[in-house]
Image 1 (cartoon, rainbow, N blue to C red):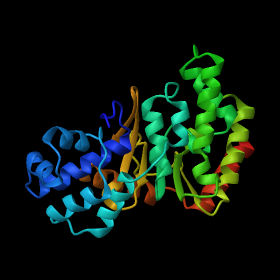
Image 2 (cartoon, rainbow, N blue to C red):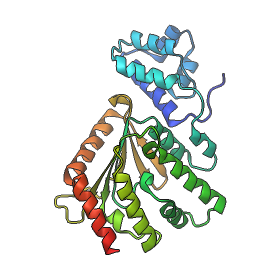
Image 3 (cartoon, helix red, strand yellow):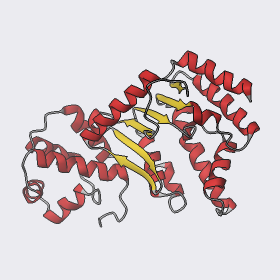
Image 4 (cartoon, rainbow, N blue to C red):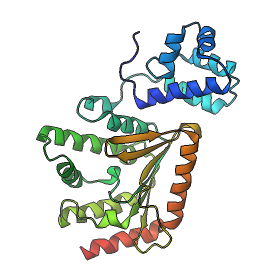
Length: 283
């Protein structure tokens, strides 16, 4: 089978984890290839996500690298043995690769945690809110592309509203709740929708008011996605050129601490609901 030309972020992550496992054991790529009965070129493709690896070979590599973390190895095997394409592949060529990778990341998440300063979290947005945002950011999009992006984001929302009901926690700054995206009517409907979602057992909503003291994290909006094991957690940051994914342990530790501090500063879910209701009444 020829190497993949465009591996997904999840495939690249598997390869990166295998490379880290090998390097921690002090084993060269050439030695790993010989152990697995392949060649250095193929090993390179595996470690960049361009080629897959079987369960037997992955477990053999883990044993040879003296990796005795069974949960971690099992999680890697689960990624390596996935078959079929996800629903997001229908949007390839329309939605940017970073968006497709985000949908895949969310689909396999054990839980999702987000802090948003200026935007309502994408998984909370109503269709009218989405359309207003997309039209503002990309006014030249054809109607067909606009509809596709709205449909794509709406489908992503099924991880919290569908059968799987992934645990989802959002900390939203008051600024994001007060910006009249799409006008007053659209904003009212958006706030009502957030209140409805906050009633779901798997959804937690916290608000960070303007009046919060000792808060200096205005530039720290983030999405923290927990994987099957902590080693497979991922942070996603929005940038001007698309989503950026971080997965090194120092970075994960840094953003875990940032998120925990934001949560400790924000209102509890009950008072947060009252706060959103108050904003709604003022509109």
